[in-house]
Length: 143
Image (cartoon, rainbow, N blue to C red):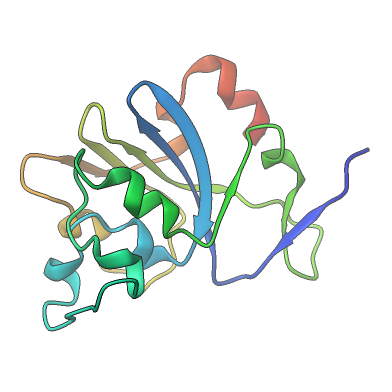
């Protein structure tokens, strides 16, 4: 059995699709808000700071934004992610499909405001089970 990977309770797990490829990250919730100024309008980062300056994520800066995440894991590592000091596996909280401009949030624990309000113009944002939007071949890693 592979070693468990223990993750801080403050982190959420996200599936991100970009250019046809699914990738998996964990970080704090606000990292998965694609229009950060709509959430925190007075934040003015310097280069190399928070989110590497990617305040509004789109196809031109998506790679830079993903590099700013706390950690990326492979799909094979996903079943081994556990919340720190527990036997509770991490659940998929966010699904961000940059190819289709679709943002799904579930089980988020920020301040209970609808985080979909903080996504770019033209995006579809829903509060739903993120796993329902994954391809069938990936869903088994999350159950």
